[in-house]
Image (cartoon, rainbow, N blue to C red):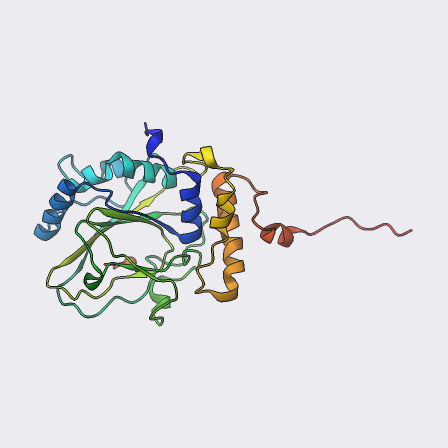
Length: 272
Ligand SMILES: O=C(O)CCC(=O)C(=O)O
Ligand SMILES: [Fe+2]
């Protein structure tokens, strides 16, 4: 049973809806960061089987298991994909020392039109300064439905974020987020462990909803990341639809953006 104190709150969920990700700095204790780093270096990380319950993914002695069993991470998982998600895949992403090229911008899957969503964790086991890379992500890109490297022709975006962070930092992303690995200008190998999970329950009010009526949620949903110009209005509509889906309220609106589009009166005026 999940400990309620570790669930996300509604403002965090609204930030996930607007930005497509949440970041938790130095969440994992250093003893696990060091143990995970050793497993990455020695290539001894255990894996799991796609489509099987996450609970069956790793043995009890696996450091990755200990990390994903942390109550804070369990709370994040429960809030976004529910209690018994499926393991999709994992990868230990390596950028070799002095690797001067970055990855091309991409999303990790094919065009995926579901409102239901998978999550992708990115776990950084060691300090990741700017010169070491740190995955670049584009906040607010998760509703732009692209197939894998279809966005590779882009180089830089207004508002892109390079994940410069301390050891133990964890990001959790909507599966649609655009991202890419960065060059590593240091003499150390850069590791980032990624884990994708699929929900097995309807993603409806799975977090701590005590603050669901907080007016700050509207400001968050209306956020402008700027790289999409005037299309911020389209993004606001995407977010309103997503928030409706998450809270089960098909009347929710922000600044009348969606209600206006839904106004299609059928009453015929009787002019007799
Ligand atoms: O290594 C990274 O920072 C990102 C890697 C990645 O996203 C990928 O290969 O799909
Ligand atoms: Fe990727």
